[in-house]
Length: 279
Image (cartoon, rainbow, N blue to C red; front, side, top):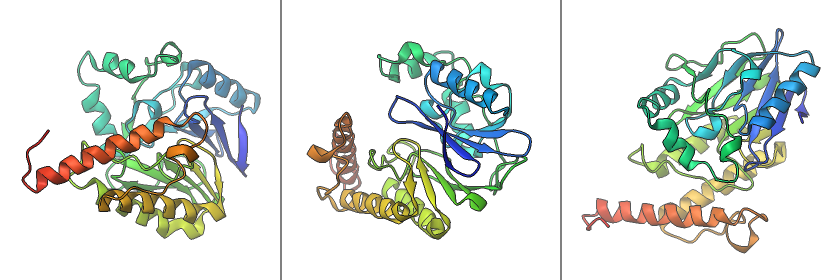
């Protein structure tokens, strides 16, 4: 069910990893950001919009991971956008016939049959350095960076004081670095956090891709928490972070495994850069 977070901005939360689809109301319809995950949930979202007398006039994917690239036929055929680099990454990954089968194998088995892949990744890349999403509604500023995934975009709805953070600034997920597409994932992440810090004073509501919506008092705190985690990774230290270990939210214990995995990969990268023998 759609839930208001502030004037003209609503969210629809999935059962899968607390994924947040964001609806922004415009003059002729709505902008839908990261539409959702499960078929029945996106159908429910379409019903909610119909009851509000709203149609989707534009879509946007914050980054090129499967759970942010889905769509449902009942949401209509509005143009769906991403940054130029995001869209190019999607085209590359979907360029061979076996791509969707590989993506299907990544989806947790308990929801695999509920995830519609037919309209996966049908996004148009906006021209490089596009500052705002082209649509007839409130200005939505694109803050592109390379943390987490190529062409990742946070979105700032300035007149509403809302930051849509994509897969950053979560209260349940640690920073997940892009260890495949960048030469310096630590610095890329810190750079992204600096970009978000620059707009923190304009934000009253922060919506992460996964997790709970935060108020103005949480924006800087989440940036600081993410930065402390990344600094710990950089320095080879064990982070003191409530999102991992025994303090993790119930059902999110797997995040500790994510942390262990990326810590090991970073240490191996550092050994390789110093001339050590790869695993």
